[in-house]
Length: 132
Image (cartoon, rainbow, N blue to C red):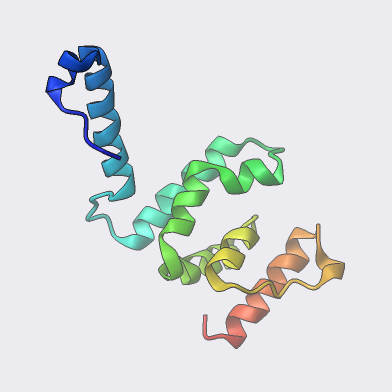
């Protein structure tokens, strides 16, 4: 997108529109390229906890996987796979979509769909077979 210049007011763009645009540009750059020295495991734990707290007890599948913290975990990339696997060992949860996106596989057998413990076991079996 072309940058909006402060002189845009001469062309009919209000000063408040320029301010909003500048704010959006700054927020967009920050969220696209976050600067953090927080260790990956700590970042994952913080995001996972935020995800759990914010989702509610009966969230839909879409709400679970489209939430910002869950998407940010996926955005951590393949380095998040062992963190998710370790989390599943301690506390089974709905990490299946993130793992599918990050690995490109789905080891859950159809008979296990809907059974959190069985689906977790399928992923943990896959993880052990693949060095996680």
